[in-house]
Length: 206
Length: 206
DNA sequence: ACCTGAACACCGTTCAAGT
DNA sequence: ACCTGAACACCGTTCAAGT
Image (cartoon, rainbow over all chains, first blue to last red; front, side):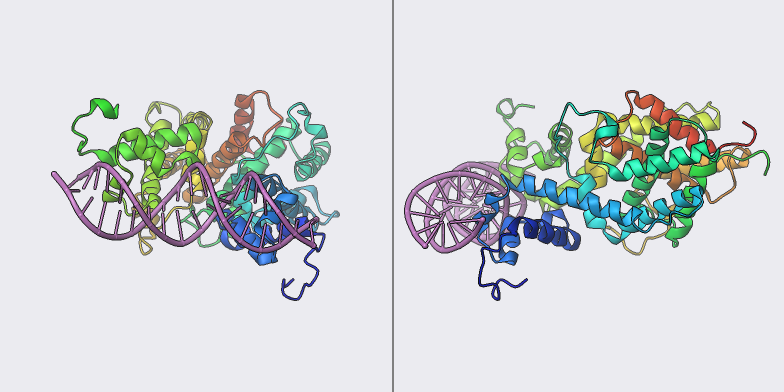
């Protein structure tokens, strides 16, 4: 939307525009490129208008981060084929996760790199937390796979955390340029997933 | 060192003091707490003195990051018992890595979170890079374990990268507060390591 | 629910002039 | 190889006064 063509600058959805424009700025230039002057200039508003919707820049960033998590969640799970074999489901979840990080490195860095504020200290029950819907979908797949005798019957939350660790670590190493070995990222991901499933130790049956 | 008691302010090792004081500031307050004004005040120097040793704040931060990587490397490998079983060696390397991240969360975040500049574009051969000595020690252990028929004979660089991914991901999730499930971090690490070695899939022999 | 315009403290960086 | 002191552009934030 161009400010010049928008005669009624009292558009009314400024809050959403501030968040979505911030998302664009993060993805193209990283979190440091978000300044309130540049942000409000892009939307054609005054610099002080932002404070009608957010108490501070930090509060805006928290909402941008939340929107980023939702984008990640949607990307990873929305295209998941529900008819797939459970192991393949886990594979595709992992692949999509890495894909998202590689395609949106600055956004990925922001949602995990920027310190997030605790909204409710008391609400520590993982089953009632709303901030990790994707994680719970992963746990559900793992529980299904345990019941189908595909996975070991260890703690499903922990197994999901182990898989998430691998994905998160690999994503970070890749987008931060710490992996120099591989010309083919796919090969590295496939070895990672194979290791997650069956380990790096030599199997006696091989 | 107190500036008042230091009559010869031309101490001569200002560069090292700037780096080590920056390390202290990162560890206590995070990377954002490093401002040149506060940093030079602490050392009792003028604000402009820094520019005798670094072309910019960014160049100082790069050296702080390098010092941080060396601290991590030393912590992980210096106490490693060379007489250990190779699998136990991998276990202890992993445990020490996670320990370091938990004990120095702000430093860990900085050395991996802050964009690092490429010093030499052309030097892409992993075997000659000096910026990842710890990684090469890990690769060596893995090669030894492959030769001892303990690990699968996949690409050792990739196996090391997979293990590093797991450690790096787990470290980040822990220090950023994304893991809510576990009261006992040790239990989570042990399951992670067990998964790295033998996978999460149900073994037929069990 | 926005606007203008001015101000504030803080930041990294630069410069002129000293020793 | 440092110092003092002033200045610059940029930043988030606040305020007074409008519509």
